[in-house]
Structure formats: C-alpha cells, structure tokens
Amino acid sequence: MCNAMLGFAALAITACQSAPESPQPAPEPALELGTIPAQTASDPAAVPSDSAIMHQSVAVTPPDKAVPTKYAVFSGLWAGRLDGMYDAILAVQTISSNGKVTVTYAWGTLGDNHPGEAAGAGRIVGSTLKLERLPNGADVSFVMRPDRTLAGTVRLAGQTYTGAFLKQ
Image (tube, rainbow, N blue to C red; front, side):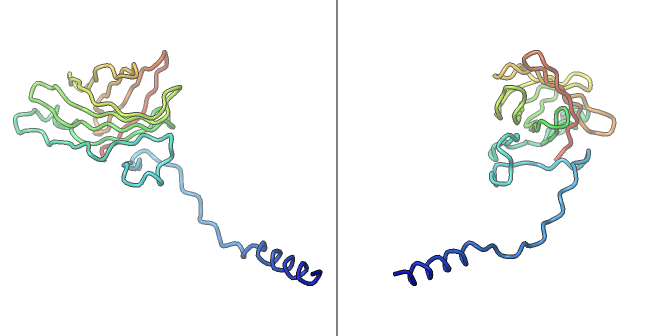
C-alpha cells in the first residue's frame, strides 16, 4: 500500500510540473488615430465585453445620386473612441436629398451606461450630423472635418465625451 501511495504521489508531482515557457508575443501598440479597427459581432470572443458591438444585420445603403455630396460623405460605417477610451460605432444607413438620415449607433461602457445599440434618425445641417435623442438619454452629434473624419460629441448624464471617428 505504501508503494502504491508513493507511486501515486510521484505521478501527481510529474503531472503538476509545468511545460517550459514559450516566448510571449510582443504587446500590441496603442491605437493611433487612423487605425481604429472595425468591430463586429461575428467574433464576440475577440471583443472585450465593455466594447461597442454593432449587430451584423445593420446595413448601409449608398446614397442616391440626388443626394448632395456634402451629405453623401457621411454615409457609411464609422468607428471611434470617446475621450480616448470609450468605443462607439456609427452606421449612417440612409441619407435623403434634404439631409435626413437613419442611423444605428452602438456604444461600449460609457459612464454608468452598459454597452448598447440604438436605431434612430437625425439630420445633417451644414457639416454637422445631429441625432435625435437616444433611448438612453444621450445627445449625439458629429461634425465632418476637412480631413474626412468625424468629430463626435456625446452628452449623457451631465457629462460630455468627445472623440474622432474614422470611416471603416
């Protein structure tokens, strides 16, 4: 019996020994403006749980030729970070010739708000796209910059968050 116990202990010690460490990959560089990745729900394991995730069924319809260029440039999928750390995604799905838009806006954890997504509407006036108030109470607007990026502003629960959004 004693030999059996010693044999079992030796087997257990051998099983608990760790394999040699493999080299660790170099840490990823911090995201720079212009390299914000598009995020989709197609691989949820690759996206942190506090990130903005847009449902993959959200579709963008290219603007009709009757839509002025100053409005048409807003069309598409845009991703950004508010205050450098809060993910957000904007899909400008349709644009009419008078500047009215339909959108889907997705946000990651922002203040006390958990990640979410809301379909909505808005209007482009000049170089500013202003969305109707979102269900979580957020007021969201985007200004088209000369470099064709969007300057996003979100006002929520007495706080203002800003960030750059890049077309995906």
